[in-house]
Image 1 (cartoon, helix red, strand yellow):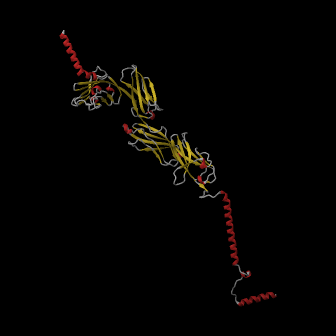
Image 2 (image 1 turned 120 degrees about the vertical axis):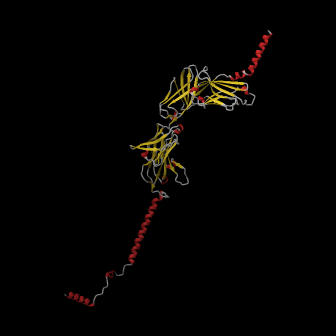
Image 3 (image 1 turned 180 degrees about the horizontal axis):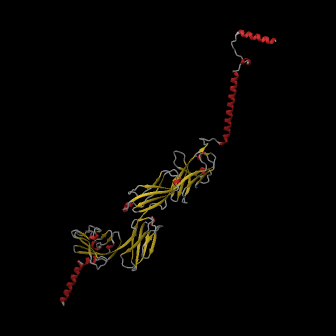
Length: 506
């Protein structure tokens, strides 16, 4: 009987000794099995940290000689495991050929107690049960992690091209029956957040736009109440800026029409063949070819001086790989039409009409008189105080009831929209009869009468002076004014006298 008690005593003592030196390591190391879900193509971290109780109260690191072995059972625990990664006591590392170089240890030093396995990127065939065995001194630590993979696919593949049909699907390696698939786009509250839920199947977007880019989360709900989700960042290759941009330019000024891609195509291994601009003006199609530039994603069209004939819709077509995407841009030209052509006389009524081609309906106008002082650069807003009763300063028509000298100069018509100032056009107002310093109107008649009287007096004085001068030159005997002297022979003179006497006697 004593022998039986002795055997039992020795047995329990041995079990207690074994449990205190070996089994505690196994029981602590054999933690509860964890499950990690990772999206295919992203990185996975299979956790295997050392038990906190083993490092508690000690700041010392683990010994240099540590052995770590990660094995994978495949899709089932019953399958024969194979080594994924092994690090020997000497530090020599061995990796499975199919997973090299995608697997590594999270902490390369190992002495910090972190033996987590990192897989980057994860493939669908990496699904399965993973176990780790860590040995140092007489301690043994183990971890068991099940890796599940969620597959998110897009057709066509990323990047998605704007306006091309997009199919989105989501599935996982979970074995239960799939009940519902939900898609959440930009889950943060806002106008762009959307939710789509449907029975198992793909989500289709007929005409994807730039607003469809961003974070998408697919959520899978299974018959066993399991809910699995994965997040994907969708990139849409299109154009930056608004969908239908409008460029406002004053007649005669330069204009730049934008055409900027959302991403640099070369970043995706895609080559930009060319950028082509076209514009239908007056029944004639104008074309511009922009040279290929793989280091830029911007292909603007520069117009040096625009006119009314240049207004309208332009199209920018960019060839990316074997696909072509296009964006329409509208050019709106701003002009000023006066009611009186050419210089305007003072006192006349003048209308300045600000005209905008291809109005979108939300524009508003504001008139300003540019300050003529060379030392000031500010603009004087057209208000009743400086226009003296002008009726429409905030609309497209500016009315000046009586044009005066102070209205002369440059007027500016600005076009505003919800986003701010869109464009402006200037008009130079010339006035005839304007004087450097104008006299009061009450004295204008007196000045005119004085000038006329002065001229009349000067004319009278001139006439009198001429008359006096002529009189001073006239002789005392007017009869002698017609006489003249001549040399006549004396005999001839006597004969003439005799003839006169005979004629008298007869």
